[in-house]
Length: 90
Image (tube, rainbow, N blue to C red; front, side, top):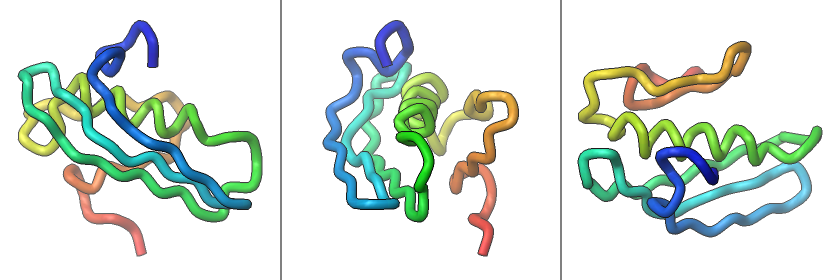
């Protein structure tokens, strides 16, 4: 996350098992609020999903999370959902 809004603003811990990975911690938003986050990815058997985790945390640091008036940036072609923007798919 070097060179992004998340650089120096995140304190987090990773964890993984075969096909599952997670990143949980704290991020300071652009307006100074501290958010708690947890990202859990299950059934992910290809390359490491670190880029997805980085994108989510950088979006939180940039946008400010739930109270923000703008939507978080998402990489083209990414299939990410932000639960504060819309309900999760079932």
